[in-house]
Amino acid sequence: MYREHRNWNLYNHQLVNRGRIIDLYLSSAVLSNKKDTEIVNRNKRGRPFEYSNIVILSSYAIKCVFKLAYRQTEGLIVDITSLMKSSLCPNFRTVWYRIKTLKESGVKLLINAQKVGEKLEVAIDSTGLKNVNDGEYRTKMYRKKKDWTKFHIVVDKNTGRILNAKITNDKAGDGQTFGKVINPIKDRISVVYGDGAYDSVNIWNWCESNSVEGRIPVRINANPKWNGARQSAIRKQFGLPPSHARRGLFDTEGRRNYYRYIWKKKSHYGSRWIVEATFASFKRMFGEAVFSKNWEMKENETLIKTILYNQLRFAAT
Image (cartoon, rainbow, N blue to C red):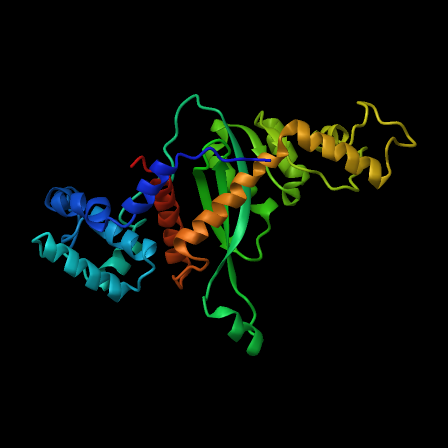
């Protein structure tokens, strides 16, 4: 049984510090606003920005963490900045517009900085985020179809940090999105854990071509005579010899389940739990729904929430 060795004193400090709005979110942003806006407005055409990108992102972070509406966020920041003896407070429309045009402004948001030469064991999976958080009653009563945004992440197995994230509509399969999520960090990966949704020929070929060990359970009725990288995975998980006889060995489902159980123990497949724990922690922190309506804002929202998750979850004190 897994037992987490957590420093509870440090963890309590992290939870307390999440509520320190001035120190954690606004203090440095307000103090450096004048210098930062000079940099942002350099070579800018049209009306110069009054607020730096850091002030806008800090305001948006307060909205996400405390689950506030845009106007409520503005009211809270007005009171906080007045306590700081500052009149610096972006209008709620300004916050929305600046977040929407982040890419056009040339702002790049990095989820996790890459370290050269560092090889990681990662777990990949997806979950659903509600597009409309109107409760289960209305869904059942009015037979309204649930609408989801799929949230795909890659998580460091040892630390639990989110290394990359992407959103798709609910029609996109996990196997189809695998390359888009994992390719930006493929040079850092030595082992990838995934559930059965990632058992496809293309993904096994990707693992072989990128020298990555795939720890993905193949289908229980998979054909051991399959060619390519998937063939060796099937035979390894089902305890088959390198060359498969015509009649087949251990073709019964009971035998296959037995050798699959042994393979999971030897490969530490249970470590994949870290991605499920990350989803649970993420949803407790930010809720189970996205509040943005258009697709561009949804992408920015989930990306900023992911960065906030890494900062808040793994802050030292």
